Each structure stands twice: as C-alpha cells, then as structure tokens.
Length: 207
Ligand SMILES: Cc1cc2nc3c(=O)[nH]c(=O)nc-3n(C[C@H](O)[C@H](O)[C@H](O)COP(=O)(O)O)c2cc1C
Image 1 (cartoon, rainbow, N blue to C red):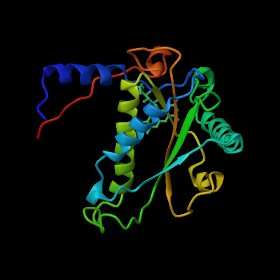
Image 2 (cartoon, rainbow, N blue to C red):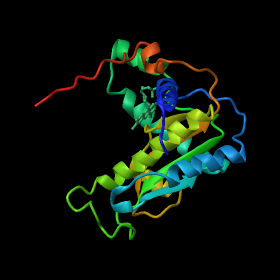
Image 3 (cartoon, rainbow, N blue to C red):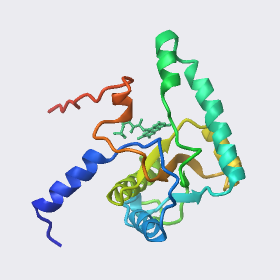
Image 4 (spheres, rainbow, N blue to C red):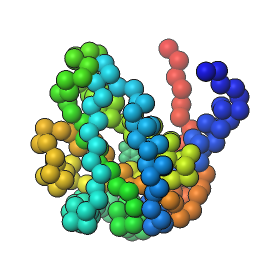
C-alpha cells in the first residue's frame, strides 16, 4: 500500500476535527460503525503484541447509574482543589456525556497477559497501559471518520470501577469512553472555547 498526499491531507483533517465530545445526540450507533470501531482496536499495536486491553460495553441502566454516581462523587471531590473564580468556572464545564451517550465502553488493562510472553515490558510495566491507550486512540480516530464523537471520562473512582462493573479485580481500570453522534463540531477544544485552557504550542527541544 502506498499512500499519497491526499491521504495525508485527510488524516490531517481527521486530527484537526477530532474533539473530546461531551454533548451527544441520542441517535444509536449502527452495527456497521460498531464493527469498524472494533476493527480499529483489533489493528492496534501493543507491547510484545500482548493485546492487554479488556473491554466492557456498559449497557444496562443499572451499571450506567453506578458509573454516573461514581462520576458525581469524583467530580465533587475534584472541585475542592479549586477556589473562588476557578471553582465557578469548573462548575460551568460539562465534563462527561454519561447521561446521553448511546455507546459507553470501559477499558481495563490486564497487567499480566499471557499473550506476548513478557516481551518488551520487563523494564517498563506501564507499557501495557500505554498499549490500551493506543487502542483507545485508534478507536477515537476511526470514530471521527464515521462522524461519531468520543468523550474520555477519567473523573471516576478508578479503584472502584472493577466492582462497579463486576470485572476481574486484577485488571487495571484505564479509561471510560462515551461514544455517540456529537451535537456540534468544532476545530477548537471545548476547554479552550470555554476559557479554561487554551491550546499552547508544544516546544520541541534538541540535544
Ligand atoms: C487521558 C485523558 C483523560 C481525559 N479525561 C477527561 C474527563 O474526565 N472529562 C473531560 O471532559 N475530558 C477529558 N479528557 C479530554 C480532554 O479534556 C481533552 O482532550 C482536551 O481538553 C483537549 O480537547 P480535544 O480532545 O477536543 O482536543 C481527557 C483526555 C485524555 C487524553
């Protein structure tokens, strides 16, 4: 396969218009789109080819209610780190689409996967979590090509997520994604637009 500048331009558009989405329409995700999201994960790289991501689709109203409760608790705790004007601004932010997103997925990492036979991770065990995060990003980009938005929710109680979702207690909770069609599109991050944090240029240093 040889790509051309056409694909480079398309990828740049996808990267430019990828956003973290917190405002969803309740339109369901069609099966064909779900299959492509699965495929994006199947094609992900991982340390030693260990494929340590463990994926739970959170569907039942009971499980979703437990996740919302965890988010509300973690969000209430997080706001105590701020005072006055910052606290007011924090309250104005919407930091999760947990009540609306039609598809919700929890990602865990198996920190002792048989696959890969330990290759590559002896000196950096955290590469297993990095591998899960890489798979998430592949899904994120694939979703964007389908005009589907992804919102990453980390304001949760990580140590309780295994019990909340009744999964293997040895897996490490890594991420929770809200997925659905966005209410709007934008080239700028919402936190930038809402005045919380502007995008600053990354500095590249040479040695
Ligand atoms: C590891 C990770 C965790 C994040 N957790 C949250 C979160 O809990 N709530 C939220 O609203 N956004 C969360 N985000 C989204 C970021 O706020 C967002 O990526 C950033 O503001 C830049 O916006 P953009 O993704 O639209 O470019 C998270 C993003 C990453 C990569």
